[in-house]
Structure formats: structure tokens, C-alpha cells
Length: 405
Ligand SMILES: *Cc1c(COP(=O)(O)O)cnc(C)c1O
Image 1 (cartoon, rainbow, N blue to C red):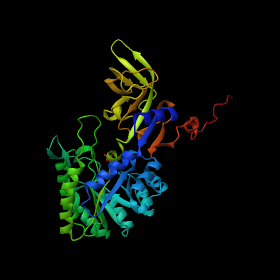
Image 2: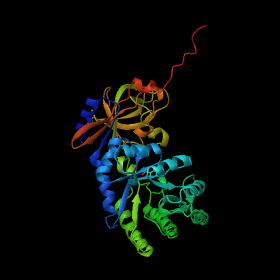
Image 3: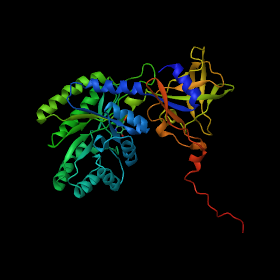
Image 4: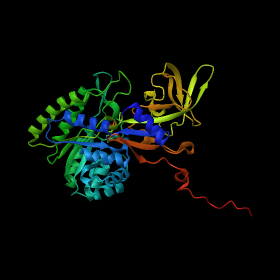
């Protein structure tokens, strides 16, 4: 989509507004799929928590994607969007066994990452096949340095606990139909990813009923020029041939699965905001926008650097600004950033606003959450209305204890 498209969306729907380019989502999906074209069965399960609008989920369905979910509510959003339960995998952490049972009842693939839960679940439901989430204890320590770490991570079942895991499976007579890892943001390097995969293959050998191996995600996308980006094509080449060898030894073809969030939606998203005021202090020129960490928290929470473009004056002379929000809290989006000259009323577009942006928004300062727009087939489609005052008071109960007397 073009700058003009973004400008007209800001005009039509007002700011702040999130915009997602469906074509970019499709490109990323196909890129990942193509990178693994040599594997006969590849399944991509989009990680719902990155961006959970049901129209976006439905778009993923048209691409042939499945879903990766972390809560029963995300599962229900997926069902609402038309997914079949068998195309959803549920990978919770630290949730109650009752929720896991409720999700299993819906027919969704369960992924368990805790031996205590595994034993309870296997005892009660030996006929429900489950996937297990392994913690391979691999992380990248800069460049190609591989170190074994994260011994105290709350995620996954440690590879050092495999003997106990096998005993539980044996005792309960449950079926393990998948092996999974998701190493999060630790893995930047393809060789490290392959190294972790070897551990997964090693673990997989213990189980004879596998339908799939799920390699999780953690793929990097560029946020600014020069950023490291996971070379998906190289990963595809290396992992495909390794996976092929595994299947040969295993005796049959199984499915290779991934569950990316950021890779699929980050770059497709733009967050459009309006500049309320320019404020010059003794040291700084602030551009104050009609948003804050209530709508877009990644810069403050993770120190994430999102490119900011002045789409009202894209060719203007560049000057230095600190871009800040309107809430009563430090909410700095960018410090001393070079941006095309900003005037009050200009529209600033934040790039890479597809993943973990709207889904992390809140009502702090009693502001409304923004609208969401999907750009599809050269047209803008409103997929979530901006909130209204009613949304703020809807669940509140005004009690009547204060009457005098
Ligand atoms: C968050 C999450 C993902 C997606 O991670 P990205 O970095 O957005 O690709 C995948 N799998 C699980 C289990 C997750 O919790």
C-alpha cells in the first residue's frame, strides 16, 4: 500500500488507527511456505496473540494457515473466525488443568509444557493425543555463540527431564503425537536454530506416534535499516534437508510445523497518529501525538525502535524531534529522532505496527482503544470500531451506598 492510501485512511477513519496490509501478510506467509517447499507436509500456525482481530484470522484461513493459541479465549476467536478445531494448536503456560480440558473437549490440539499437568491430563484422558513442549536450553550468546542456558525458564519441559516424561507417558498409556519448541526471542542465528532442532529430533526418536514436529518461531523481522532479519530461505534449505533425513530414519513422513506471529504480521501494520502539539523546551522539540503507551507500548516496554514517518510531509526537510504521547506518564516513542519537518495536525505513521501492538493496548487514562482497518484488494475495510464511552463504563457497577442519611 502507498502513502496516499495511508493518508486517506487517516482522513476517513480518524486517528489513532491501526492499518494492516493483507497483501504484505500474504507475501510473508508465502515466503515462509516457499522456503520449505521441499518438505511434503508443512503447516504454518499463525500465533494469534500477535494480532487477534477475527477478520485477520479469517484472512489467514483463506491462506491455508492454522492457528497457534495461548488461551481458551484465543481458541474461541479462532472458531469464531471459522477455523476447524483440528487446525488450532493450544500452547498454554501456567494455566489451570480445567482450561486445558475445556480446550481439549473442543477438539483442539493440546500442547503441554509441564510434567505435573501432563501426568494429570494423561491419567484422566489417556485417549486424547497431546503434543509436548520441550525446552532445549539453547540460546544464542551473540553471533554464532551457542550456549546452554535458561535453566530457570518457566517455559517447556526440560530435555533433562525426558526420563521422567517417558515414565509418565508409559504409566498413563497416553499418546504423544507432537514435539514442540518455541525458544522465543533468544535465537537470531540459523545455526543456533538448527542446533536446537537437533535436540528436538533427538527427543522425537523416543516417540513412535508422532504426527508433527513444531519448531515454534522467534523469527526476526527488520524494524529499521540494517537490522538483523532471519534468513528464512537459508533456514528453509538447511532445516528441510535435516527434516527429510529425520523422516527417513523415523520410517515415515510427518508434518513440519511453525507458529510465527511477528514474521507474518509485524511489517504489515501501520499505526497512524495525529500530532496534537509541537512543544519546544530549552533542549528539545517535542512532537506530542494523540496516543501513548495505552495504544502502543512496545517502545516503552521493550525499548523497541519503530520507524516513524511523517506522511503529511514526507519530503520535508528533516529535523530532530522527540515523539511523545498524551498520557500522564513518561510515554516516549522516540528520542531525538530525525523526522521530516512536523507541523501540528500532521499524521505520523509508525511502521512494524502489526505484531504485539493493538493486542497490548489498554484503556489507561480512560482513553478509547483505536480502530483497526484492513487494507485488502486495494480497499480499506473497517475491522474494529474505535471504542466509545460506553465501552469504558459497560462492566462497571455504580453502587448506591453513598446516599446521605
Ligand atoms: C508468542 C508465541 C509465538 C509467536 O512468536 P513470534 O516471535 O511472534 O513469532 C509462537 N509460539 C508460541 C508458543 C508463542 O507463545
